[in-house]
Length: 227
Ligand SMILES: [Zn+2]
Image (cartoon, rainbow, N blue to C red):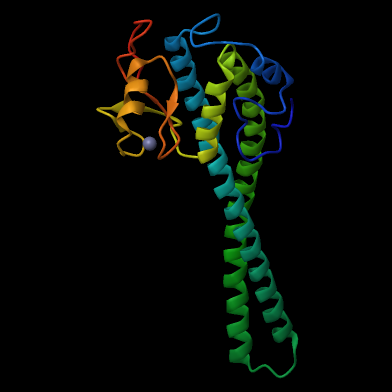
């Protein structure tokens, strides 16, 4: 249950490597009975979606930073080679004084650009390293939070949530408004809309795989989920 660290994608709610979650699958847990009420389940799913969205956002940031650092490293190498080539030409005999002057001028300019870029590169590289370390910690914390949030949640709900996460569209839980998924703005079939409206089943949008809920949760009649 510790494969989270190197992966660039956030862990899944069912945690297929998590033996605890595997055990939970065998526990009969009809909606609302013995586990979470539908309202609690929805609140937990919304929190899970927030958690996974945040992690996903940080991961994207890290990916962009890693690409930027690699680009800067390549540019630094180009500049270094350009300076070296100019120095070699300068050292060769037979340069006229104006040619030598031009080369010295160009070397100075390239050196200055290289120094600027090296400073920025060092900064970005440190930033990427810090973000990567922070993300590793966040993944560890996220796993603990995920475990707490998914405790008592029926496996079929977790499986649906995992599918939503893997489909990669945030947020992973979306409100249904007048039979329309607010995630993808497509209408869902009437019978599915009724299921969602009943509040007794967790269902996914067939178009975008987000889990759907309607604001007025019936069934256990408790409060209004946010969003
Ligand atoms: Zn949708």
